[in-house]
Length: 301
Image (cartoon, rainbow, N blue to C red; front, side):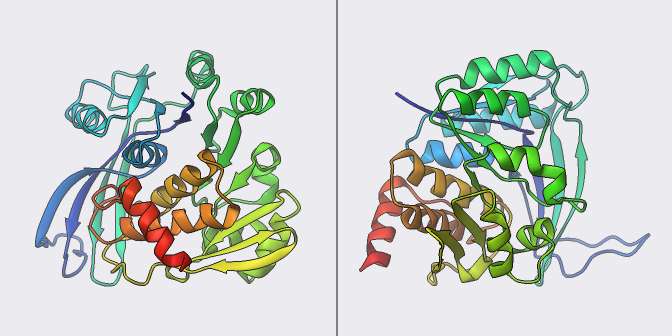
């Protein structure tokens, strides 16, 4: 039985929702609601894939602190396999206070995630060998990704936002990835273009099939030189965008895993990503495999 793999920092989110405003220095402001949830990133994508019935393997860093204990329990509850490669005695994951206001959200974060060393790279390769799909980040595992690619594993890259992102900075990763899934802001930044259509044209130098996520407007795609749009799901009511990109990636990879068309892979991503924004937190709202396929079938009618 094949599987999907990935390495990344485990994130725990402290969610302060329905905040009336951000406090000024010296002020205290109370939120109406508070919760603790696993945050976004590759672990969130793999949990969503586990919920869709696909076997996954996660390489991450966890300690003996209370946040790591919470994360371990959540992974086990979701049926997501993980291998712990932590070497630090500190809190080796990312902890974020997410302040969710009516108009937007803001974050305060700490990260004790250690950069990959040779032992971590060896572990990622050994755990990921034979994977059908590997999720990539620009996180220091380039040599492992390249080796997996040579052995037939599909590579799917999600850079996330970076103030200094550019084609030159990420060219090594772009050149070996099979797919790249930027949102509109990331696509415009990395290509230095003004519109998603222009960004798509630039990214076609690297990929035969191009994706640019357009938030509530769905996705722009390019295949065989032709642009097309895959609409979003109108019935999903937006509450919180946290984890939307990770959920999209899960739906998209579900399609790749089972050999669906490029259009359908994007549609699956729009469904899983759209559902994720209907509740507060990266992993609070999700679709089952049955719901995913039924929703896709309705959109096709």
